[in-house]
Image (cartoon, rainbow, N blue to C red; front, side, top):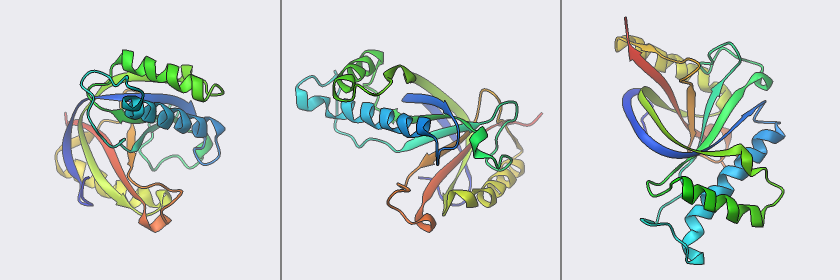
Length: 200
């Protein structure tokens, strides 16, 4: 929960379920299915205790928010420089608790396959990901208004003597704290996070 004033953060290793895809998230069927996969698997793990097969180390928790990494072919995307959303490449993901392992993930896939056989579960993957040093800021309002917030984030990075490190390996990152289906556009809260490194 960062503030609207940018700050640095060292992001440690965390567990995620991820789904990769392409296209405009507002219109893409691929994106819609990715979210169905992510939430279906995340809630299968959370509710595993109800079936008496809770993983070792299980504890009560709230399913974390949806997150997204965004980029485009051949052009690092900084949240500003691409207007045609159909060109987006993305990884949608939801963080998982520490007790979730590859085995727990595979068990969740098997459970979800029984309930929703139409889903292509091969698209989902389990990953342990360490994002490293980043700068982040809270954006409040519509997604299309993000460039002004990103400009503030870029100024902070430069003033800190750091360099934005968006590349093929490190992407523009958004964490969606609000559900756009329920919240008015002006009430949306989105964490914007950019990878950084020390200047040369």
